[in-house]
Image (cartoon, rainbow, N blue to C red; front, side, top):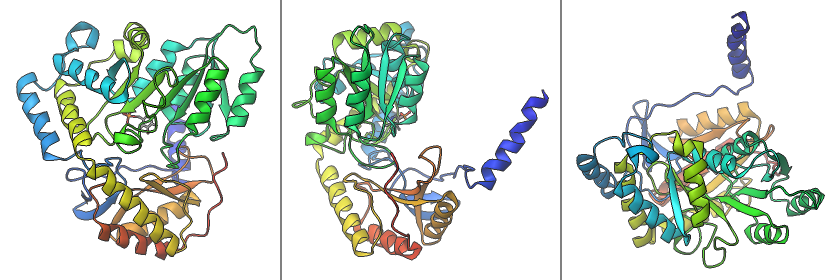
Length: 397
Ligand SMILES: *Cc1c(COP(=O)(O)O)cnc(C)c1O
């Protein structure tokens, strides 16, 4: 039992290195302004990119469906937890992504783990971008496949790694990448990845948690189905808790892929289905995503405004065209101090430190949403200028 005595030392060490994490308690819904500790702050750290999380029509659909379907699903989807609303949402997501089928999971974390563990085993190979989301990295590792990491977006290294797998190796090869990188905001080199996958007979898995609803024609994400169908990107993962404003995730692909997941994905089989009311709310938000393109257009204008303002104030931006606009400061303590200063100026931003990002690249993670007003962005820019950050180095990939 004494071995667990080191827990206290671990916590002390984290605090000393500026790596201790604290949860802030929100006193109200997500929105451009958020209630924190009795104060109203401009909210620059949610992934609610389209402002749908607290849209009355989405919340209303949730309430109405809860009245009809109850609060919980009651069981795993393979027992009695799979409802007509779940099926309707899966059909809608398959249509939206241009795939045969889609399968709902309780979270993106579970979806990625479930896919990788269903598709891969010890005789197989998984190739992952170093900056992939933790759920992809962990899923690849837990699948027991041989794990190959390539430097961020480095398709030359990926090619070399694939070429080194012996030709007589009969194992499967899966390339997995974030579509939009969650902490840097840049996009994966999708055309190249798809070309490499095809050339090597590998499958390509794209987790577009931050691109769905935000990016590309119709907000379909980084994977435009008219260019990259399920023959090119065999496994497409999207989450519902970001631009769609609800909760959960889906995997979209061929009939065979989805059926395999139903049979094999432990995170699907041994887990209670999401509440039907969440599925109903997501149907409502998907409808708004498609019928109100102004949200995406307004968001794009906000991103342009932020970047122009940041450039004008000499702030060191990363090459991101997405609503994720990080300011890399490097040192965790510097990031915490900057976060506190911004908060004193009325702005809440993400303070992201290792191990979420590589050591030496701690950063402010600023996210913009369609719900913001231009004046909020200008106030944030003025506050950021006060931090006076030195130009950060490019992220070591
Ligand atoms: C947020 C995120 C996930 C996890 O999704 P949850 O539904 O929040 O569990 C997976 N992948 C990426 C790239 C993400 O950004």
